[in-house]
Image 1 (cartoon, rainbow, N blue to C red):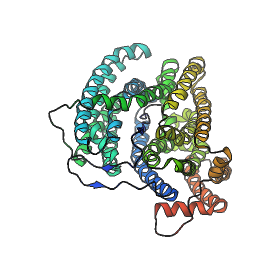
Image 2 (tube, one colour):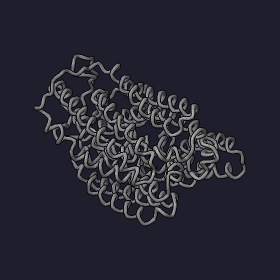
Image 3 (cartoon, rainbow, N blue to C red):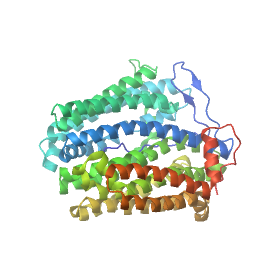
Image 4 (cartoon, one colour):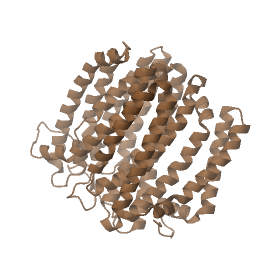
Length: 524
């Protein structure tokens, strides 16, 4: 799905059985000790949950700013303006899957002794790839314009293509921050990006720039993000290109790059068909319908992949089973109440945030919430494949998914965006079930133990959904219904969890704010 970035989860090589080194740069920066996640299951749960909450809070904070700017821009621009940019980003996202050929991920997995030389190799290689992709993307403009029948794309895509080169300038520094688990640097850089992007877009929209307010804002945000990450990560390149490790670095990320290519197709084929068959206005409605599921649920999946990988990689293989169940439980705790609230409160949410001209986004948003939910639940299983050296499983499951989704879109897209959303829900739910089944067999975890791990948030979510129905029925004003619905969701969900599994909240609190004793995080 665009305009989100395809989730990229680092792959654990067979030689990386120990902990992930945490260092900010190879040139003498202060380093932090690696977390001893293998010490106990309780420690795994604590560090994973704290990492998830911290990173997710920072990630959602940035996306919340995007949401605010989008809500303002939605009142200044038309659905067709959003649809044109979404069409352009479809092609950009496909090229984005090969933006560094896995070099950044390989750098994250490098050892301390080789980090300095490999960092320089990755920097030069990434810039070369970024420049080439910018040229290729610019050349796609006329083709995209003819394919979709919108002449504006021949000018929009070459401007957006500059993002590949701009991002490549900061990609190595971002990889060093990820290796160090330096969420502060990444949060500041991303926050600067979204603030500048939103301010530029709103200013240009008020000046009457139309679709170009979105395009120029996008490019300006990327430029300042690069500057921000350079300011915070002190590593600086030299005028050399060490090639000693190049082949090994590219090979390291090869399988995951193939997975990303398939993921890009699977996550963007809906946009291709909606834009091609139904037009830019329908695509604009579809894009707005995806905005909140992306912000509140899919972003959790992205952050979970980043946090769970080092947590799983540092575990002894004997403890992976417990780590898998603990992470599955807390992802369910976080995403299920958000999902049910978005589904029930879809109409007042869309009308309040985006206005009545986007009322056509309501029904498809409900379906895309389910799609995002199944995607998030699938993350622990996918991470298990990578940690255990079975990343190929992702290829075997992703390929049939892409084929089925593409064929279904070709046959059904003309029936409207709601049918397109339904296709995604069905396909992603089947994929999630298959992935959980494979992971459970790999770890020897029965379905009963999975249910025992998630039953409390599932039941609490059902209770919360039932409590929200009267709000929609009796409160007509969209703003009042949304505000009351948020309060009901928080109060009823927490009360239900307290009644069903009080220890779950006690453990969660102890993990986030340690100091008081708490029961160990039961995995079964």
